Length: 133
View (cartoon, rainbow, N blue to C red):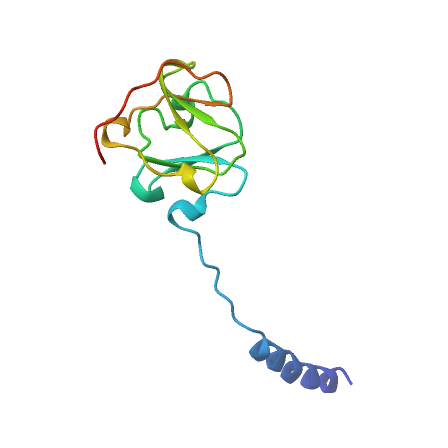
């Protein structure tokens, strides 16, 4: 009886395995790696390279391995994000607005430049107008 049951189950299991759809997971790349609700910084242009994602102020990006390394970002939060040139919200600031316009490459003068990130907050002296991109 066991042999008969086993003989009947093997073709059923094999048939079920052949009819299951095959799906391949497509890993997000570039800016698409940044989940909604986060502010993300990337070590490469166009959302490439290493990425950090933040939901709150970060006084020292060195702790996350991104001090003076970011070249692009995307602000997918509802907050205005102030990027500070130095740790602990000192130095000068640049602002990243939220939404679709809050995504892009930093001007060349500001690549590998920022050391802390502040959500909302008062900001500080402007880093000035960067030369073209």
